[in-house]
Structures are given as C-alpha cells and as structure tokens.
Figure (cartoon, one colour):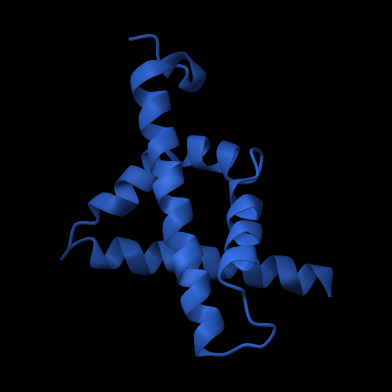
Length: 107
C-alpha cells in the first residue's frame, strides 16, 4: 500500500531524528555532523558516479559475495560499506578544498 509505505518511511525518519536529538544532549556526534554538512556531496557522488556499483562488482569478483543471507554476507557488506566511506571521504575533502564552487561557497 503506497500510502502506508510513505507514512511509515516518514515516521521512521522523524523518529530517528528525535532519538538522535535526545541523545545529542549527552553525547556529541562529530561524524554525523560532518556527514550532515557534506550530505549534498555524498548524495551527488554516491550513485551518480557509480562508486557503490563499482565496489560491489569488484568485491564480488575478488572475494565473492554469497547468495544467501548469513554472517559471511553481512561481513562482506560491512567491508564494502567502509570502502565506500573511504572513497566518499576523499571526494568530500577534494571538493571542500579544491572545488568549493560546486557547493556554492566562493570563499
């Protein structure tokens, strides 16, 4: 049911934001702050340049992703996720240092 899906997706996101705002009183989240400040760059490069697809296909050809859900599949997925974070971090730093005009900053 599309309406139910939209409602659950919206409430889930809103709930996650409320929980993180509550815990922010006690802990600081510098990684989440960095991700929020650079989310436009991350979203623009994540699938547009095909890094995720490249990593999944490359890792599958090298190490082999299992066809079933299990511990091995989750470990492989976490490794791919961290590799993707490293690439995205490099892209964000490159844009923030050398191509600030892409984010609208002229300084």
